[in-house]
Length: 213
Ligand SMILES: C[S@@+](CC[C@H](N)C(=O)[O-])C[C@H]1O[C@@H](n2cnc3c(N)ncnc32)[C@H](O)[C@@H]1O
Image 1: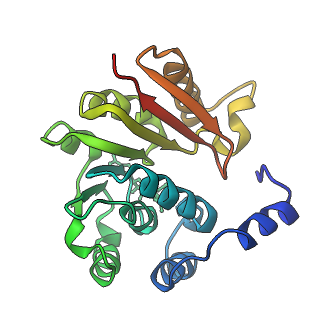
Image 2 (image 1 turned 135 degrees about the vertical axis):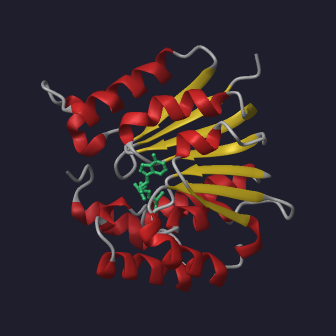
């Protein structure tokens, strides 16, 4: 389901800075050669992630769900000079492709790409994160949020993708993944430790700021 009329969506794309050559190639090759290319953040969302990261200037970013590396490279654009982005994915089949893209980028030395189950890795991370992007299996969003919460600095930002789930959040008989997203959105809305905005961009991004309590 597209939330925005095609004409307005195209207009928004045309009035958003273009992707650099590497991102444009990752976008194209993902659509040509990789299964489920709709998972890629894409031009407009990618520029939004880059813009948010550049505003925050994070020292530590955690991304849960690398896929072909597109959003990782967008988020890395805002890192401080001594910054690092850790990105996690279980899919070994894409590893060589993604490592190749990261190696070609300006952020090769700043990206730590770990192939493993995210829940296992997060608990072992001894870092404090300024910015977290949750974009992996929907049924575990709430678990990832709980695992990462104490590792986020006060004032830090957590972004969660696909929280409108192609509009299925309005279904009267939600399926398993939709139920997980509904539970996640309610959990955030009820969490007194944060403030949040659900941005209806692309498939919906929940933007969460951890309060300094
Ligand atoms: C929507 S895609 C990520 C898209 C990417 N962030 C982007 O915007 O271009 C979701 C990814 O989560 C990964 N994933 C699914 N379950 C996972 C798990 N338990 N641990 C880590 N990654 C997982 C999938 O392999 C897939 O590549």
